[in-house]
Length: 329
Length: 237
Figure (cartoon, rainbow over the protein chains, first blue to last red):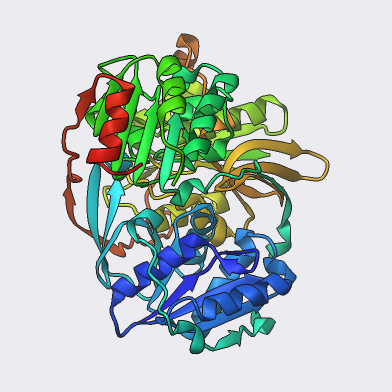
């Protein structure tokens, strides 16, 4: 077995979800070799490659694709890159995290390689036997891959906790090889152009891997009121999440949406304020360790998954929590 | 220019025993209709694949405003790779300038077909779109995409594959006159054999199980009690 991981990097190091993908690759068995594919341009790529080479003892090789074509995460050139690298390396598995980056690129590359990818894997039972949620997480489907190589997976980060770094890993980094891009198929890749990305700057931890997540729903009634949720998050060192209704109403930007089609989170503590608990929302947070729900409506479905429920007015409860909750550790 | 819209029939998320159009496909169809109404396109063709009952879903798409429909009739299990190949074959027949799909179906939650057909066609892809602006002169689509870090904007040459996110638009309801009109619209039937596509399954479903249930929680009566429980029982703060 040999696995290729489509790595994401930013500011000279691997992103957290790529470490989750490495954790997942380790479930394929001890005999499996793991290569990381990094692409991009500029000095930060070299830094990220160094990080990748020494991030875990299971990494046997880092592949580096240096080109301006990969400066932005455009699916067209990246899928062709995966196709090329697979042709050279004949991997048995290709894995990416199932964030918007992997979801955009992996299926396109799979089509070029004429194989069926498997999305959102939450468990690797055997090298070709996987579990993935369907129907917004209301059922779990065990699937066996019976197609030809490569078996392409996107993995749900929250299901594969980050592996600890070996102490001596730094002393023995994996070799870094540059990918020969001279034979890449460039046909059509200039038809898509990156213009910009708008991001809300925030000091708060990343929603995907925060220890505590504080979520607000439509009951907050306005963007102004939603600031109470943000204040509480600040006090607890938590990330802020939102329901689809709160995002649709314009209280917060889209990247905060938790649910079937938004972010999947599984923090140690999830606190939901004014969230009714639609199945699409539960799909995004039901694996949280401890769930707290505060809602005026005692019949809200969120209470069926909450470890601690408080029936009450969030406009009274949040200020009281702000006053009484201990500061972040 | 033509627009093709791919539509999937799924279990209705609100009523468990009813089948209906996948919500993301409704958004895809709405976007196609809006583009046609803006004068950019002349025809909207909806496409669905699967058993005979897909015709009902296609009839709904005609009632919403699609001009005609295509049904690929098959009882075989269709995974996204097969759907993408069938769509590519239909694109080769119909030659649309835009192919719009929902970003995922709410049954299998795969989120793959749009990307796969774009790859097979070697067309640019604008996935998870929350805003689409078309430039008729340049033949370019400017697409806002919902990505993990916020909104990404791309400029894509037509022909293009788009997949829709939730906030792209608000799908319309079919009106009674349009439901009546839809009855006389044409639904053309193909089989995978007609399209020279071999249906292949790379996957076998071994079992479908219920996820582990969460233990029933407790209701607390005050903020003080909640903080106490979080501190001393759950030990998370």
